[in-house]
Amino acid sequence: MNYSELTQAIKDYTENTESTFVTNIPNFVRQAEERIHRLIIIPELRKNVTASTTSGNQYISRPSDFLSVFSLAVVDGSNNYQYLLDKDVNFIREAYPASATSSLPKYYAIFDGDVQATATTGNFIVGPTPDAVYTIELHYYFDPPSIVTSSTSWLGENAERVLLYGSLIEAYTFMKGEPDVSAMYQKNFEESLSDLSLLGNARLKRDSYRGGEPRVEV
Image 1 (cartoon, rainbow, N blue to C red):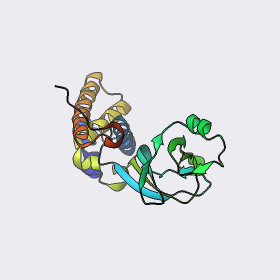
Image 2 (cartoon, helix red, strand yellow):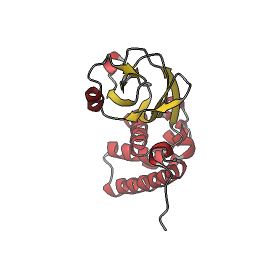
Image 3 (cartoon, rainbow, N blue to C red):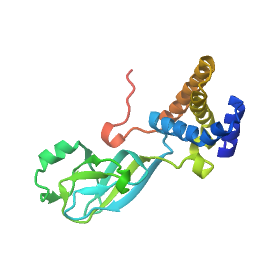
Image 4 (cartoon, helix red, strand yellow):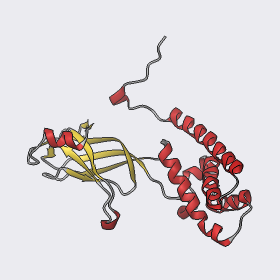
C-alpha cells in the first residue's frame, strides 16, 4: 500500500471527503506511524553506522534519525571490537570525575536529546575520555521517513493493516465519530499490532553477547 492508496482507503472507510478532513490526512498518518514505531521494535528498522572519536572529547554525536541504541562498540588499536557497557551519565561522571582522564572508552550513556532550535541531534558521553582517534560502530533503531513524504514505507509494504487502522483511529478521533466504530478501529489496530509484534519477536534476536542465548527449561 502506497500513500495514495492509503489516503483513498481512509476516505473510503470514513466516507469523508470534506476539505479540512482531507487536508489533515497527512497528520493522521504521521501520528499513526509515530505511535507504531514507539510501541514496538521492528527488526528491519535497524541501522549500523561508523564514526570516529576525537582525542580528548568525551562526547559523540548521535545520528539525526536516532530513536534508541542496541549497541555501541569501539575498535581498538589492534582492530578488535570492544563493546561499551551502557551506564547512566551519573555513573560516568562519578567514575571519571576529571574529563582529562583518558584511555580506551569502556562505558557510554545517552547524554542529551535533540534540540530543534539549534538543529542538534543529541550526544552520547563515553568514559573514560578517548585518548586517541578510534573508530566506533553504532547499532541503533532509527526513525524512518514517513510514507507521507516518501510515498512508500516498510509499514506500507509489510504491515498495511496496522498502518491503515492506526490512521483511521486518528482520523475518526478528528471526526469525533461514533464510539462503537472508534472501538472497532481500536480493536483491529491492536490485533494487527500484536501480529506485527509477534513477527518482530520471531525475527529479533537477543543480544547474545550481553544476555546469552535463551534457554528452555525441561
